[in-house]
Length: 478
Ligand code: BES
Ligand code: MG
Ligand code: ZN
Image 1 (tube, rainbow, N blue to C red):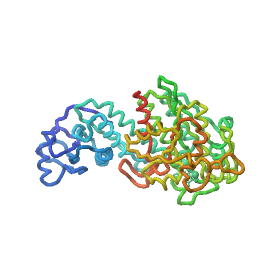
Image 2: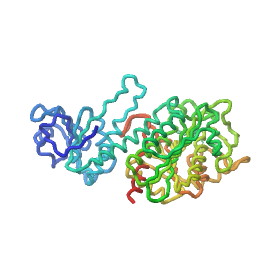
Image 3: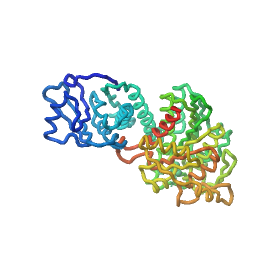
Image 4: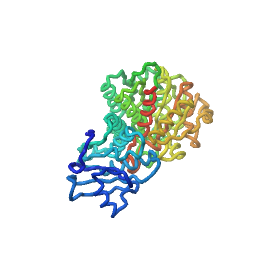
């Protein structure tokens, strides 16, 4: 529970109090205690957390001073660093004096949204399968501010919850997150917001002619599902399609992954998770936009019916692809998913996918690879990424188209080589996107973390959820 109050008597307050402190300009009531503590420790140093257990004057058992340092401007990373420290420290019922942090940013509403968002991200845990830990205590936070920040508290919570739900989808193991279970999740979301949706089963996907997508599903006994949810709330008719790679497991298929490369592949639906997380935020904020979510969900496993290298598949738009590597399966599902988006009149397409190890080689694990056929669209996505601090970096597409077309038997091949393969994957999608404005976000490096980080624990990160949501929030204001 997070509530808001506009008046507090610090001395009578029994909850834990979090206060930002700086050299001068601290609350009068706290002056005495600050003076006592600062004689022993530099409590104003940026990021310094000082816990005090007052014995007199105060009823509270614990007061936490957060050192703000002294700067002209604070960047987003610094703001997140401080709020993350609060998130990691906060346990019991607490009150946070929001206005004491106002030197961090001129807009108190922005600051409040960030505060709540960051705390809720930091507090996220995935304990679904830990016997003793699955009843995580709900936080009880009260924001104290002279300003009306109720909406900002709500929006901060929504941003974090959308991201945390995406994280959980990624963290669920393969045996608990099959295409059918993912489809059920999408259905529940659609029904909660009374949206038009359809979950296509295997025979319906066959009728649609999505031969590349279905080829990936051949080796699995779990049925493929095509998820399509429609959200319409703009005055205009333009629809943005959010396409997410939905491989609920990627063993590599017959081009099998080495054992070290396979663990973690339950997260190969990270793109689907991110678009669903962003979509949830769009719905909960009732943004005035039109969005389609499209996910071609399947596993990539091995049995006697599985695809093998040398197979040729017929895609939804009629073009053929020679499979050279069954582990380059994501693009096979995505070319049909973007064709489906186009058939459904998408005015622009944004796809998010844990697509290639190549992007990890190129950009590491902090930066998402971005690819486009449209300058204006990618500039908007980049601007949103700057706002949320989720780093993206653009990589080329067009120079890689030619080798995608190299095949003795088909129109394209699915694996032109390891050199630059993040771009080869993007280039094949680009061929099927054609002229529709498009951005592809390769989150193979950023979708999950091996260890805890500034904004959360190890596991799914929900990367791009907040960036995509921000992109639509900007459209909303137009
Ligand atoms: N799902 C993987 C990409 C991936 C790698 C995601 C690491 C997350 C972490 C994808 O389907 C894949 O297997 N890509 C191959 C492509 C290659 C066969 C051209 C790869 O990256 O090696
Ligand atoms: Mg693969
Ligand atoms: Zn994959």
